[in-house]
Image 1 (cartoon, one colour):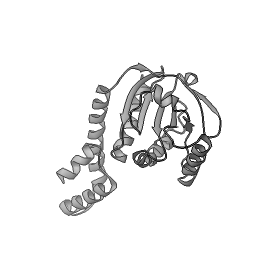
Image 2 (spheres, one colour):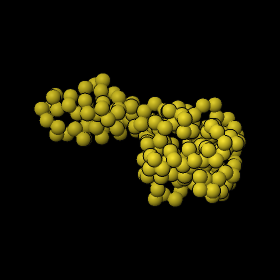
Image 3 (cartoon, one colour):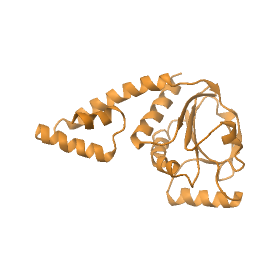
Image 4 (tube, one colour):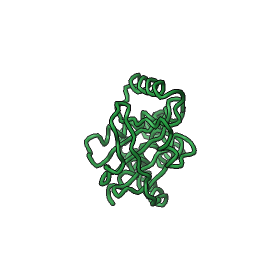
Length: 207
């Protein structure tokens, strides 16, 4: 029980871990009564710990400005997004960890879809092939997975170069003043990713 509970405290509990934890809880308590409250308590511990650690990781550097088009051909200008919290997710269709992280990021897009102060952009960089081929592959990937978020096509890899990205997926959270406050690299765990992104956005919204 304690080892399983620690996964929740660390924000690393998967659905399978939660299922085993519930069975262990029921075996110990004789029923599932009180389990939801128990989990809520562990998650609150995890949230407080995570927010404390995340605040220590804050950075402050001007976000490189860019103008870039979406898959639909609409131009996005970062300078026009001052006053909003902006999440940039650099990815590519060939990148396994990138694709593994996208379902969690879609959930975050859904969570904030009614908040006009938060914007998500998925910057498709280092995509292989000619530009038209890149766009078709990316559009097919987005459509086949039923993702509903804004994809920016970094066809010449100029934006990813400006942000000095060395590996993908890499995510940046930019505050309302146009400063990069957080950077995360790679993908480990879906729940951990969602909790981190929510904490980062929350901190930036409070500033």
